[in-house]
Length: 236
Ligand code: PXP
Image (cartoon, rainbow, N blue to C red):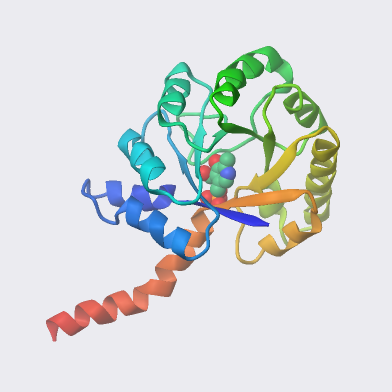
C-alpha cells in the first residue's frame, strides 16, 4: 500500500503567524525523504490552509506526486488545469466544516460530476472521487470517467474500538470489492491513525492511503522534546 501525506496542517500552523514557518515546501520534501509516495493538499475555497502559490510551488518541486484535493467549482477546475497535478481528488466542501465531513454525492448528479471530471482526465490528470463506502455512490463513480475512488474512512475511524467497528469495516470491504469489479482503483483516507490503520490491510484492493492529521500530531510530539532542548541550550 502506498502512503500519501496530507500536509494541510503544516500550512495551518504557518498561517497562524502569517509568515513562512513552518515552511510547507520543506515539509513536503521531508515527507518524500521519509518515503511518502505522494503529497496531498486541499485547496479550500476560503484558503484557510494551503494557498494557490503553494500548489504551484509543490507541483514544481515534488519528485513524487501532487494530489490536489478540491471542490467541484469552476475556479478549482481552472486552477487544476493550470497546475496540472498528477492527481486530483474531488471532495465535497462546506465552508463551515472543520474538515471534509462526508463523501461526495455522485449518484444524484452523475451528469454534473461526469462533465466536471472529463476535462481533467483529458488533460492527463488522474481523478479520484472521495465517496462514502456506499454501493450507489461506487456504482455512480464508475460511470463518471474517474479512474479512482477514495473511500471515506471517517466512520470506520470514529467507530474503531466500538461495537460499530465491524459494520464500518465491512462497508469499506464491500465498497472496495464492488469498485474493483467495476474497474475503479481504490484509495482510502480520513481519520486514520497509528492505532486504527492496521485494519486497512484487510482490504486487498487498496492502492494508497491518504493520511494527514495524525501524522502531523505524531510529528509534534516526536520533535517537541528536542525543540525545547535546542531553545534551552541557547538560553542557559
Ligand atoms: N482524504 C481526504 C479526501 C481528505 O479530505 C482528508 C482530510 O483533509 C484526508 C484524506 C486526510 O484525513 P486526516 O487528516 O484525518 O488524516
